[in-house]
Length: 342
Image 1 (spheres, rainbow, N blue to C red):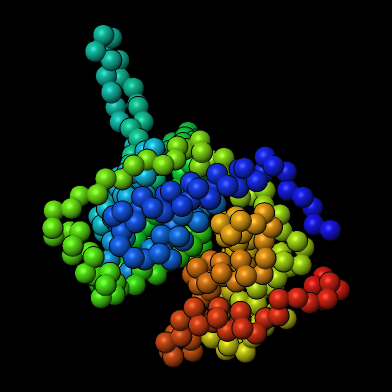
Image 2 (image 1 turned 90 degrees about the vertical axis):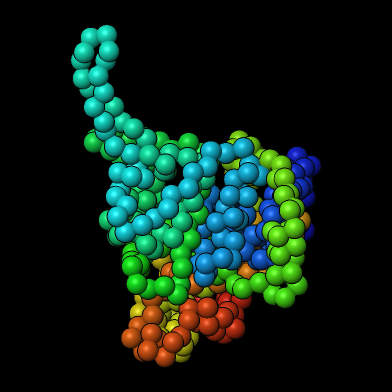
C-alpha cells in the first residue's frame, strides 16, 4: 500500500508548481517559444545547478538570463568573456587604499562581478582557459579564495553560461573539469515560422512587456530543499546508476555504440544531475516520487556534455545526443536486484 503524503507536503508541492509555472509565464512574456530551454533553465535553478546554453547568436540566450533575473528578487551581473579577460576581472582583486585621517595604507579586496546570485557568463568560450578556470571554485564550492581569504557567495548562486558553436577562431573549448560542473547543457534551436512572426511583432512594434518578480532567494532555497526530499525507490535510482554507467565504454551496461565511439563516460555528477532533475519533473507532474520516465527525460541534457568521443566518433561526426538515445533504447528499466548489486 502506498504511503499517504502528509497534507503539509502536498501544500509545499502545490506551492512549488505554482511558483515554477509563475516563473515560466513571466519568462514567456519576453521569450517566444523555446519551451524546453525555459523548462531546463528552471530545472537547474530549482536543483541548485548551473546551465550551459549553446546556440548561434541572436537566439535570445542572453535575453533569457536577463528575464529570469528580473522575475526573481536576486542580484544579477553579466560578464562578457573576451580573450583579454583576466581572472581578477571577474573574481576581484586587492587594491591599496589610504585612510584620509591617518594616511595609513592597507589592502582592501574589491569584489568582482562574480559576487552576485545570478551570473551570466556570456560567450564563455571566448576567454582563455586560465580565466575560465577561475569559475571552478565558485561553481562547485560556492566560495572564492583570494590571498588566503575565503569569501562565501550569497545563496542561491546560479551561473548561466552561453557559448557559440559555429565560430572557432578566437575561442577556447571549455576544459572537461569545468564543463562537468554544469548541471545541464541546453541546445538552443532556431525559431520556427510562427515564433519568428511573434518575435517580430514584439520587437518591432513598440511592445515592451513588463516582467514581475515571482520569487525571493529564500523561497528558491526552500524549493531546492523540497526537491531533495522527493522520494525515489531503490530500483528507480538503480536505473539512473546503470544509465550513467552505460556511458562508459567496456562497462557491463555499455551498448555497442558506446564501445565504438566513446572515449570517456559520464562522471558521478551526471548521475546526480539525472536524479535531481527527475525529482523536479516528478513534482511538476504532481507526484512526490520519481518514476522511470522522469529519469529518461533528464538523461540527455544531463549526460550529453559529460561524454567524450574518441577519434572514430569525432571523425564520423557522431553527436552525444545520439549515444544517449541509443542507451535509453537498449537499457532495460528493471533488472533483478541481484544483478543490480554487481
